Length: 258
Ligand SMILES: Nc1ncnc2c1ncn2[C@@H]1O[C@H](COP(=O)(O)OP(=O)(O)OP(=O)(O)O)[C@@H](O)[C@H]1O
Ligand SMILES: [Mg+2]
Image 1: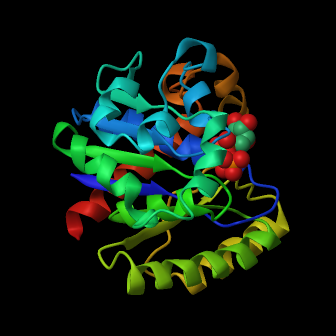
Image 2: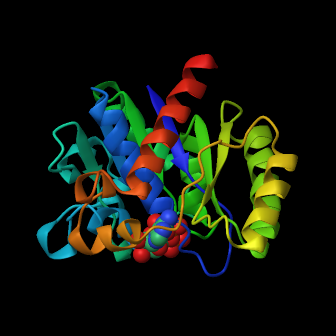
């Protein structure tokens, strides 16, 4: 069983496609016959709403079970995809960053929760928020692999340097088993000179770690959340869906080769 953290750089603007990466990966791994749990670690709860899980329909969420891991299953929500289960987030999760500060073992609450349910799943995906607070740190300490979606913009290059410093520190001090699975470029437009430049830089900096698949800027990807669907059920024939399927295959190949 793999615990994949879908984290990325700390660009102030956020909004780079992490939710998409997590939702589509969930679709693929599940479509491949694998039971998948998607844990939404972001108080914005976009990964949850993007799968039609809305706040007025749920009573439990990651915040309500983080300090009560025996009851984690009570927060599980099924999706239209029988193999995909979600542990949704809620805006209350913002408080966890503050409440965790004084707790002993504050970096390991999510890992403890995952240990309670890990046997039931082949894959566990953790969708991280754009900030590097304690909940994100919990995700990095719970994960065995980290996938970094990166938009082809200048600030992304600055952000990824900071993220890699954090990754090194986490590996040294807290979670030596965490591995950088790879960097995937999102919202790529080959007609844009800056996008091409960033792609070259990333490929140069990560010769063994970049994914060949480029996620294009695609209208179906941008509209899918408003339908509460992953793009693979919204429009499986779109360029966005094809790209995510190709990415998921690359991810699985890389894991198999490791
Ligand atoms: N490749 C793409 N093409 C077009 N629109 C996209 C693409 N990827 C994401 N989007 C859109 O951009 C917005 C942000 O995407 P998403 O929520 O996946 O980003 P994020 O990195 O998780 O953001 P945050 O850091 O705020 O959590 C969404 O409206 C989404 O539909
Ligand atoms: Mg997100």
